[in-house]
Length: 586
Image 1: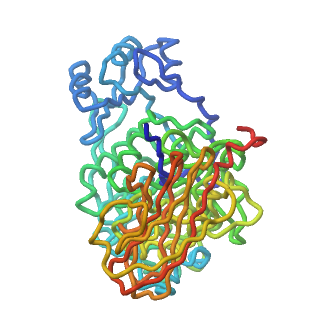
Image 2: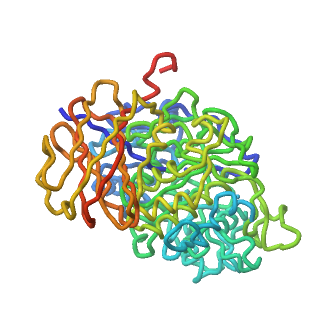
C-alpha cells in the first residue's frame, strides 16, 4: 500500500498584554455512542444538572433537520453543519447516539489577546517594490477580522471605503433567536481592540499623514463584532459560516482572530472552531490566530495549535521574544501534518508597544492614547502580532492570488528571518519578513529546504549533485517516467530507504529568460511533487519537497517549457525526522 504523506503547511490571536488564561482543558474523551464530546460536556453529563448550551456538529445537514425536529428554536449555520441548542443531559445522550452526529461541544467564552513595526517586517519595501517585480499594498484582497468591532468613523477605517462591511451581532445567542450579522456604519467598538487590530492590518494612515499605515493599506476589511470584552465560540463559528457562504463575493482570503483560550490543550479536530477553520482552509481562506499571552511553555491556545492555521508569537522591537508570548511544547510535535496539533508558533511578528488606530468609543484601549495624535493608541500582545501577519498574507495574495493556504504557510516559514538563541517551539520559523515572503509569493516558490529544519527534519548524508541540459519545449511531450533520458526529459534517481522522512530536490540555471520545470515521482511512477503549477519566469531556480516518501527508487525529472537549450545544476537531499532520533524524549 502506498503510504506517501506530503508536508502540509498551513496556519493563529489571543488577548491584550496581561490577559489571563483559564487552565487548559484536557484532551476530549471521544466515547459516547460514536460522537465526540468535549470534557465540559462530559462533566455536565456526569452531574446531569438542568441544561447546557452546546454546539452540535453533524456529518451533513440532515442532522440539523433532526435537531430542529427535537428543538424548533435551535440556531443553525448556512454552510457548516452546526447547530446551537440548549439541551438536557438526556437530550445530549440521545443526539450523541445519532449516526450523523460528529461532536457536541460547549459554547466556550474566549478571551481577547498590536510606525516602528512596519520597518521591522520590511513591509515598506513591499510597498516600494524593493527587490520585487511590482509594488503591493493589498489591493483587491479582503481580510475578515473577528473581534470587538471597528470604529468605522475613524479616518483610517472609513465605512464603505476601507471597512466594506461592519457587522454587528443581532440576536442573543442565549435566547431562541438566531444570530444574524447586520452591516451598520455606526457600529461602535466599545473596547477598542478590534479597531487597533484592523488598523494594523489595513489602516490607511489618513489621520497621521501615513505614519500609522497598516501593513496592507489598500486591502479591504470586513469586521465581525463578536463581543465587547470576550468572544463566544458560536459567534466566531457564525462568522466563518458567513465567510464560507458569502465570502467569495468579496474576495475574503484571510481571517484574523485576536482571541483564544484553553492554553496547553491538545489539538482536537472535533472542536467546532477547529472544524470551521479547517473548512476555511479547504475553501482557500487563510486563518491567522495568536499563539497566546501566557508567557511560558505549553500555553498556546487550543485553536492556535491546529495544523490548518497560522499561529503567531510576539516579539519586542529589538527582535527578541516578548516575555508574555505563549510558547509550545519543548518535547511536543514540531512537524506540521494533518493528523495532530502543531505545538509551536508558525512564526513571530512585532507585538510590543504597537501604534495603531484608536476607537473613539473604546474605553479599554483609550488609556494608551498617543499624545501627539489622539487618533492612535499603543498596545502590546500576541493580538498585536497577529494582524501584522494577516496584512502580509494579504500582500502575498495580491502578488499571487493562486496561492493556497498551505502555500501561504510554507512561504511564511521559508521566508522568516532567523531569531538566534530561540528554539522553534518558542518562535516557530523566526521573524516575519514581508519582503522575502512577497518575493517568494511572486515567483510561486512555495517550498524551501530551510523550512525542513523548523519542521523537525535533519539532513542525512551528503547532497547528491545532479546536472544536465534540456532542449526547448519538452513540457508538451510527456512520455512518462523513464529509466533513461529521452529526447526532451532528463531523469535522476535516488534510492529511498527506511528512515528517510523527507526528500528535497532543487535545480538552478543562469538565464532568467529560460523557463524549465522540476518534477518528483514515486517508485510507481506517480508524480507526487512538481514546481510547475505556480512558478513563472523570470526566475532561475526550482525546488520540490515531499515528506515521508515510501522506500524504493524515486525519480527527479527536469524538462524545458519556454526555453532554448538550457544547462542546469542541482541537488537531491534526504532528511530524517529529528523527533525519531534516540534521546529526544520521543
